[in-house]
Length: 560
Image (cartoon, one colour):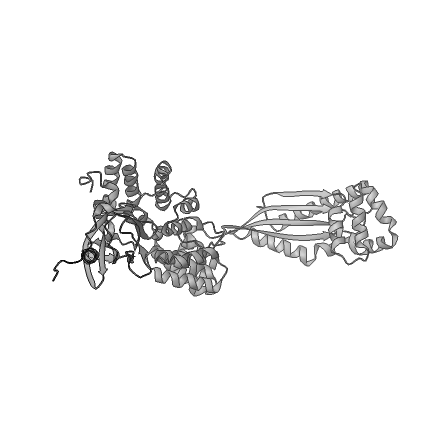
């Protein structure tokens, strides 16, 4: 019996043995990660791990599941797994050739948490080969996360305030007309005793006796109707002015009104402008013909001739229109002086109900004490519950105090009262932004389009969405930490430095960003001096700085 094993059988056995042999472990240098270290973009940490699998490595009957694992602070978080297969496996996964090797791509994305700054990204490998399942050693592919983008802070945004209509000085106009007969300039008793004239005199006496009112000016304008010659009309209008001014001077003296700014007077010989307005507003049948004549002829005498030629129409004009143009108009300009800031505060403290809505809304702007603002807005809501502005401004205060749920409730109430109020829409978007609900924020900001305060809010939305270019554009010339952060992320370090230097009240974040600028521009003194100031204002930043890869090349121990 021949004990020799056939050559063909031996070759098949060797091939089967080679196919079933376990895969070797993956080496770290097979992989590159972009970026490395990882970097926060918006609210996430995205990256791409690319693996170059060498030839003669990936077994033909193997299925390899790769799981990216981020390890930080004693905990781990997995990204979605990616599976690859050898060329003899029946499946739907990407195939890696045994003979040639191949390139594998593993996407990575994590929702950022501050504890992730100090972290490592690993790849775990689970292999299914025939009936065998085993695990290959994990490989580290990235070290740490640059988290500068996470400094975008919606809580520092200013909610849009609803404006008050308070005016310290309100101008009022009092007026009365004195009418004249045709071709006359004398003041008739019935005109001087008309309700209009008597009311004007009463108002002037009352204003003169009221310390909150100041008569700024009294003016007399006298007119003649445009029928008749220009010389006659000039004398008539001039005499009507003279007689009315004389009457007014005597009346003010009689009523002991001595403080009235200035008494001025002027006349208009032929009131064509008034004539045109009255005709246009009348129901005269042929008024369009009259208006056409006025537009065709500019010379006053020719105008009068042409209109008189319209004999049937002129009778209506003489009866309905022209008598209204023979008059003197007395107009008094009176300034009503509102309460001073001290009086408004005193009135609120004693009895808020003595103030109107505009006074209450304005009084709230006189203090930086958020609790006092809150009390004033609550009083305004109690006294004027149908006005949306107090609700919106109360929400503004609650937002600045960190009570975002309370703020949202107030903003929603404002929006229910006035669904078209853009400030209430924008402010709801701010709360959504604080809660990282970017979709809701975007919807709310869309309803506030055109609002002047919207730019910085959109800037933070774009930062949190990872759109740095859009953020820079939205911030425009805004001088804030968020605007400077956008410029840093865009690589415009000179502009970012100017923005930070222009902030009126720099805080710990301002100095921290200055330190980041120093690190990115290789200025160690700028790093240490600004970090020292940042930690002085906010000691919690010492830990952040110690873990921040922006400062990995510097010895910052003395600064923090």
